[in-house]
Image (cartoon, rainbow, N blue to C red; front, side):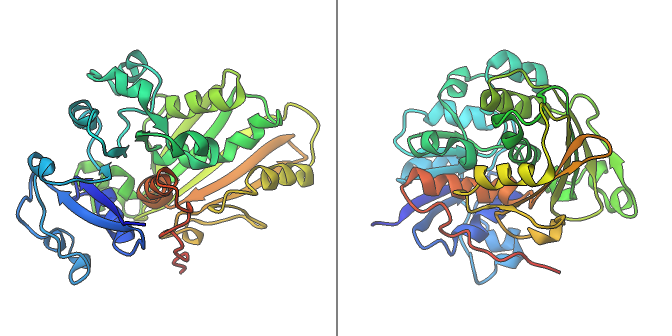
Length: 345
């Protein structure tokens, strides 16, 4: 088959550079163009020197997109900006994979409540398919617009979905306690990710109101057919990449640890990027890969279900799952171009 022509809108951030790093060696993809409004005319390798000699591609402007004929466009744009692109180009023939949060939620009203900004293209929310291949692969294959999941929701949703699908755990409340590396805050310097604030430090943020909470709840509502309540608290770790999520849930019925593990193994048996671990995972076990490592246990003393879930926030939490979605949309094996081995130590 002819190679898929891919465009990347917004290449100066972490997700944009990770898309290039992964796509440059994808056997079925040709990078057609990459844009950056702030660095138009520069080489990508001048913006990201680690790509020198690998991706010395000149950055164009989004205004030049009509000069190209891409099959798929990845949007590595901020929240509130992607919706303008999708609104303008929704009738064009190329498929769109949006890595922002603009089309993940159910309605304009829900978006505006949690993102505290106006949504200008609600039709896109109705058309978009939530890009979690482990849950919605059939819909992804036929989609034209993919709403790529948030990084925290990937680790939480994959850790919780079997509990609700098999009526193992009560849907409300479920506690999601997550830790992330500083790349989750993006590449732009801000006080929260300055070295002096991150190094030798550990803190919570977004308490009670983090926008990923509603994303988790809405998707898990769809999975379970019930109303879920997620108590989500994110924390910032002094590491560069990775998410470690600990989930606590009350059992809906009697269950033991062996049964719990068997349910998870069965649920993900056909999903190559979810590994049900035999021991507690660590973020370095998935570093640089599209894996989600999950370790479910049952505490007989407290009667609580505990699920540990780890991902690389830049890959399975962003660019990797975007490529996994692209593979499904174009009839490829979903693992194509994503067979990296974890970088550990």
